[in-house]
Image (cartoon, rainbow, N blue to C red):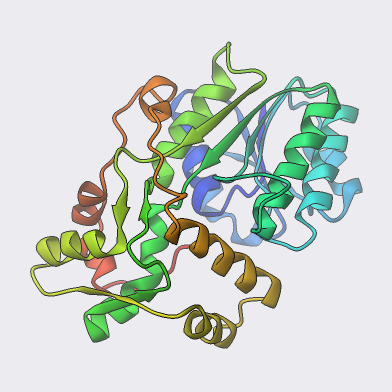
Length: 293
């Protein structure tokens, strides 16, 4: 049995799909079982639990031998994910695949990169066989720009000409499923990227071509992005972390391309153009759903 934390989120849903396709028994952890219809549709067992309440994790982990560890974007992320690791030790879990982040490093200027590095260290000290997955910027994050693309024919970010090897979350899930169902991945850290590094200007050109109308990328100042994010209700610590990561990308630190999707996930990673063609309506604002990174 594999416990998937964050099972109803953007990545967790795709991991659930990949594991069920492989015939694995899956249990999805959720704080609100009433909102877990997706899991029921895929025949997934549902466990109510909260990473901030360790006592709920013991029951959720009963009978599980593997865990996909995905914590929320939270200022307490190190504590919350460590709670899962400690509960996994108590439950006798033999393997954990942790969703980390591109650039995870305790010296990083990006808060959540530091948090993930701290959890990776806790995992290394746990004695449980584990694999760290460090995906780059999700292609699905582009859904957050659908409204401005639809209404203004433009999207905005403080990225300059920095290139990013964006990755489709479905390809991340393929890697995660392989790690959890095959031998030989223990003790490894995989940087998971798409097949190419694009600037947002180049992404705008692809969007224009696919959507059949002009779409522009507008480079803005960090102060403008900060004001917009705060206005959307994003917590202050996370706003600063996002801006710090954007600065890293702007300086060219997001352009590395790996072959992990091919080697481990056993598939060709989706290009941004393939992603854009598949989700053209949604990117054009025809649907109002918004992805959560």
